[in-house]
Image (cartoon, rainbow over all chains, first blue to last red):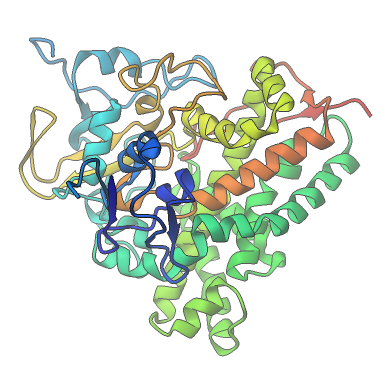
Length: 68
Length: 400
């Protein structure tokens, strides 16, 4: 499982940092997404699905099977 | 979808209970994916009552939030008249201008930064609760507590002197009242702008260690833009969280089983705040967008210029999205409500609001464990006629 976060697309709404503060933070400058852990335990999949569903701009993607 | 579409309807606004959205939404939501609507000025448009369509609209590139194409979904003398938003007033603009302005302040409103403000918020909350105690049983919680806390927090953040706060609050309230006449609105706008026109140049010469000082030192905004940004933050913060704070207290007092659960386990507070945001959705006039081009949306042909309004209270009670949507359940784990909008315009101050609500509810019910309404609940006057819904006053009592 691999997470990607696109800072260009991010609108700094902070849903990811609210739902999964161990995986995501926000930059102090403009609040844009900071990925803390790109390859978390697969047990976090449900939380990540919620992050993806609630991200207002689709900046967060989760590859469930990145094939690595 | 039904075979024969119904004729266009006005936006329903009549509520039979203060905690439920207007009664007219549910039957319309069952009929079609989106509902043909007529705006009070005759503009044709659409009402969005379903969660999935609301999310799609608020992220769709063919629809604009620019003020020049918007109309009010309910009757009011306050119309946009096709004017663009003031410089810096980013809420009613599109990207890239919107995000250029917004990004200058988003660093102040992150999850982490707003949580760090908890001690300042706690101080303000307890000072207002001291006032409540002094006022004694029968006091109006709106007047003494819920209205003051968010505006004091925002003034401290922006760097606006406390002496100006109540006057600014009156201007915000005037502009949020749908029955406001044009002369009243002009008075409020000139009051607000008059203050900012005096205040901003003073701070430009002497920037302090606050949000406004940060914007000034950044040097990217001129005086007009600083005024527009400050007015947007004041308008966005004063009225919204105050109504949510008051409405949440009213709701918990009227749902004693839920309040008891919360008292037993304060760990539930975060989830309770989300559930109250979903259940109450105080932005009851919703979020509007207009079509930049002819476009197919939700199975309908939308014409360029047509306006679409998301009835946020209705989408947050969509049975397609939530189990038992009309039940307040602070243990609910499936949130994802749209009370704070969606897409790039999602509420800038949402995490600050969450912190204020959490700290506010916690401290109030801690200090006044026997808090209850001082009047029958159906005698609580409601703000049906304001942009943000909530109790106009909330008389409360407690055992000394």
